[in-house]
Length: 538
Image (cartoon, rainbow, N blue to C red):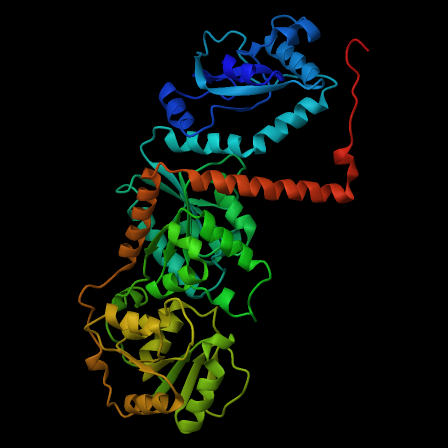
């Protein structure tokens, strides 16, 4: 303990780690303390909150004697510390020395923050201590190394919308498998979700033990997994402060590539994501390549492709496991086109070509169009039930998927589930999916309007028959497979003892928070005001 004091004459107090008992900052056991301190600096700044503490003789000489009320040694030491600190002395915690205590024998060891009068600077120092990256790292590692039967894993699903979209389908399809696999992977899953989204999707009834809407600041986890890409620094910081293992899913890079949708701060968020993530999940190798090429730092994290299900029968609604006849009153045939109002979906130009090419054929469009067509019926996206969507796919002659840019393409498998041919705009992603679902030959790529119209005509004339599309991939990849790939990444990340990224992201967000504090002082100068408080001898 004497080494820090010898290194700097203004280190007036040096404290050991306390192990056992219920004292402030005490570790639950010697083994946990050793595991944690193997990753901590030899010593670090700390505020004196009570014994045990080594005090420089000159500090006692200049600012003593200890002024204790009764046997309150903690209060006396804290008072001595703040008097000395006002003259330049500070305190260090020596992480190399363990001091064992027990509740029944700890005597005067601090059990609560000492109560000092005329010492707002003392409490300011305590508040600042809790936010330092070293203090946060110590807390995260204590959580990680505590012996437990199951690891606490937070799944951040706050990006789940109170409605239906591809992100929602991805998240909702994984949740039951995380619960079902929890015992096998020795985890306790916690789903962090917005109340309105939980209500819309009836999650409280499905997962009553695993839902949380708000988390207290001191709630920590062994690992955190966000099931979609982050859109803000605060979402990155939420994970950094709650776990030593941070994993994120990157569904696609559309929001970065297309400037009409890119938020001004997104580039900084994703640069930080690439630099600080322990693991990155992708729903296709196509998405992995896009993110790696745009953010090369991401290659240093473990990159895992956890596909969406590529097993078409899993997309059948409920227990509907057979091809059903058209609904009563349904006029066949019709072409189904799937997209939305975003330019990269290619919806408007494709519907224009189809309407002109097949003026007597009905076309149903899932999504919003900017123009009206005589033979086109629009079906608003986002609020349709699973049964309604299933009927649309079941009764169409084919699905046209005109998107220029996707991360996966869930509608493709919705259509294949009902043995409906899919006419999809050609891309590297489409080639990847065709390879993965072999020998199913249900995807027919097109590169221009002529190819589109030719292929759709073949569907209308039954030259492409549903019977040729039915069946399963040779090795179908399921939602359970996807969940297992994610949980295996969590396992490997927890086994990795390299905590450099954890330290770096804690340091980064500490500095960001410090800038926020400084910026608050631009409008509230009171926070920077020097406070002279009356000391006893005065």
